[in-house]
Every structure is written in C-alpha cells, then in structure tokens.
Length: 292
Image 1: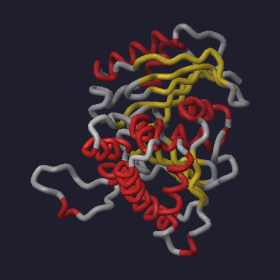
Image 2: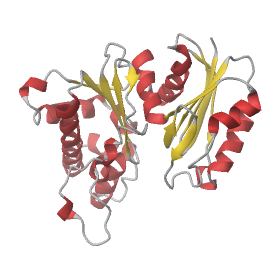
Image 3: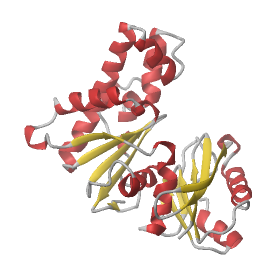
Image 4: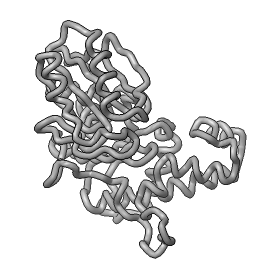
C-alpha cells in the first residue's frame, strides 16, 4: 500500500509517499508560510499534493489539536492563525477522491517511532517533543490514548512550578515555560547574546564554555522534573524524547540521570530514549494510520 503523507509544521511542511517498510520516496519540503493563516496553508497543501500520483490514500500530520474521527482542527494557537475549525479530511476528500486520515503532529511522531523507530519494542510509552513548546503523546498497547475530548497529553501545560511565581500579567508557569527548547535558548541568550539557537549554544559548550554548560544543566533539571512527574503518573516502559536539541546523545543521557535521581526506586526500570526518525517521524506516523 502506498500512502501519500504530509507533515504540516509551523515552519515547514514535509511530504512524500510511504510504504509498509517505512520507505519514503518522492520526498519534498517547502515553507508552510503559516503566518499567512490556515486558509493559505490549506491552499498551499492542495497545490503541493496535486503534484503526486499513484497512491492509495492520504495521511496528514499537523500542528494543532485534531478531531481524528472527522479530520478537522479542534484548536490551533497563533502559530497558524485562523486554522481552528479547518476541515482537512473533507477538503482533501472532495479534491482527491481518496481516503484521508488526519492526526496531531506529536501523536503522529509517536506512532512513527512505535512502528518504525525507537519505540518498536515498547507497547506502552510516552513521547515528548521539545521545541518552541513541549508536545506530548501517550501510547498504550500501541494505540494513542486521546482522553475524553480527544486532546489528551498536553504535557507542555502541566505545572512544574508554584503559582505564586506568577507576577501580574505574566504567563502561567507551565512546564514548557521553563523546559522547552525556546526556554533554553532564552536562558542562554541572557548569558551570551550570540546563542540564537541550539547549534550555536552547543558549539560554544564544546569549546569549554562552563557558564553555558551550567545553564544547560539547569535546563535539563527542569526537563527532569516534568518527566519524573509523568513517570510517577503513567509508569511507562519508556519515554521517547525528540526535538532538535534532543538529537544529542549526551544531553539525553544527562536528562535520564537527572530524572532517575528524582523518581522512586520502584519506577527505575523506565528508559529515556532518543527518538530515532528525526524529521520523518510525523510522515511515517501519519502513514501508519493506514498501514497498521
């Protein structure tokens, strides 16, 4: 079976044709231009998908909360304006006359890792992606746990700091406020304005910048606090961590050490594992909606 899959992100959209082995052909990537709004994103998607032929179904991974039964966006934040309510399945089915399935991007990434990547040996695991925010997915018996309204696992919005730390109109102290990659870069830039992204930050650390190394240790401690809480709640076999900065083995090892220092001994068998599929996880996870 050949699945035409697309992964709609806030910055870039990736697409290609996937098969049962996880092979992706005719892969391409283009700028989402999400700042132009949901209708533009959909028009662009339709145009790009039209260039493909010879496939059996279409699978979409997308940012935002998704109603998977009906294939529309329940809620999307300001990263893609006017995206909430977008009827993706209906639009694509009317245009291409083929079966369509739609999944949230982090759920899709988790399914990709479950069927083709780092989570193949785990039936029950959590998946977290660290970027501008923190995305989450819960997998139980190889199935996404969705919750009562279909939008479970908003891990980035759990609280890991006390509410009194809020000052006036300041944002709430969500987990992602202190543990996202954006939070790490914000902390690093205060110490060194040249640290505009993770690559610059870790290049400087490799040259022996102890101050920046201490900032990373403080940040991974924030990551560990959230993971420890999730471990105590879900008792998962593993937590798969992804996102650009988590590509580094040494960082994942540090997170694992700090997390295991915080959890009860009876939970210590949990594994913290680096995601293995990189930026193809969403595509493969979306395709798995038809392949599994």
